[in-house]
Image (cartoon, rainbow, N blue to C red; front, top):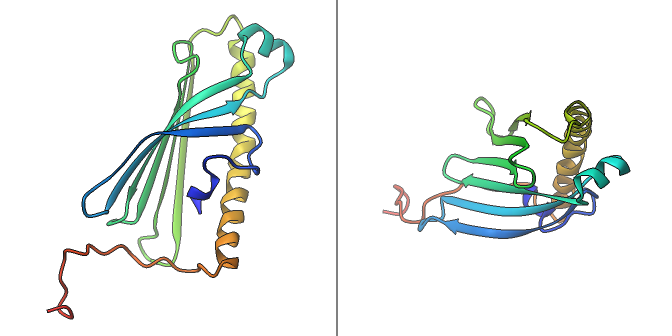
Length: 171
C-alpha cells in the first residue's frame, strides 16, 4: 500500500513528485533498498516564500524493505537548505510481535533550525504545524491505499520465503 503513493500522489497535494536515485535488490530478493529524490511544494506564507526565494524543496528518502523480517524502514531528510535547517523523519512498519496479522507503525522526526534569515521561530512553528497535519493525513492515505488493494482482491501478502531454502516438504 505504501508504494502506491509514488511517483506522485493526488492525495498529497504538496508532494509534486519524485525520481528514483537508486534501487537495489539482494540476489535472493530478501532486501530492497530504494532511494528517491522528492519534490515538495512549499506551504508557507507568501512573504516567507519570497524571502527564501523558492517554491519547492527537495528531500531524499531512503526505504529499506527487509522481506525476510517483514520490516519497512523509511528515512527522509531535507536536501534543500540543509546548511540552515535539518529535518529528519524515520518511519518503521513491522509485524506485531504477538499477532502476525497486525502491522505496527512507528514514526519519529527531528527539526534543527540553525539560521534561517532571522525567521527561526516562524519556521519552527510552521514546520511543527504542518508536520502535525501531515501525521493525520499520512494515516488517512495509507488506509485509502489499503482499501484500494482490498477492492482489487488483495487482502493477504504471504511472508517472504527464500527460494533457495528447502523445506521438509520439498525434500
